[in-house]
Image (cartoon, rainbow, N blue to C red):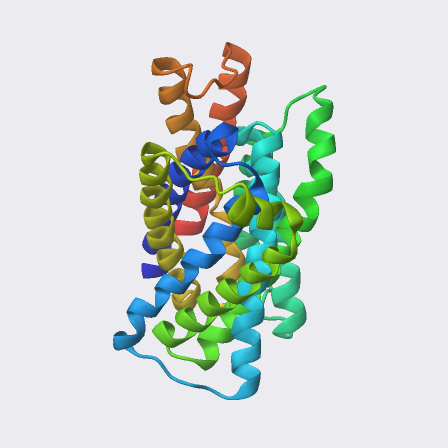
Length: 300
């Protein structure tokens, strides 16, 4: 169960990263395309892990690794776009609520039935997903319905990248597979240079971040890189049949995000303002209880 502890640690860090992403995308970073471009380019920093073990596998293994990294970049663009347009503590969990269903289906499809779960595992899985969906739901909010035009394809792409990453770690040592996936993210991020918006931002406008924004961005990406490393380690460790549980456990990230958001919005409302009321808190507490119940059932 070491993969479970690694996963929880990763989602704690991801919760903090998502909060800072919301702050940056609110105005400091020009657009999701620019933000995604920088994320992808910074992925090449994974080369620092080459001394830990780097192999050159066969052409098929390299292709799958690069594809996994590339799809992750396209999914990230959808994620940042949704994060910029809609409330962070609602749209982000919505993606997480759908993602494990896609992962379960893709695992079953690609690995020939390895995604089949027992009764208690299905119960835990449904509790975890229900908690994530409940924390994202808002009655009578049309923007949530509109957001699903971004949420569904983004969740599918994240899931596909996730399953392909498992392919990579089944065929390569962890560090080698991780590096190849990051190289794929870097290469696919370069395709964003075909966007006129990205080229103008980088080469014509010559806009540079303020020192404070640059420091926040780089620090946040360093934490995000550590979280991503932990998540990939969990993917490598988890038994194949439990792969979708890593996605289902993303509800923990939204619990951490909710806690961070409430604390920041109460103390610094000018930096990040989040709608908080007794009804909303009750709904989200109920969601946290569902997620907690799912963890307990799964642990037992």
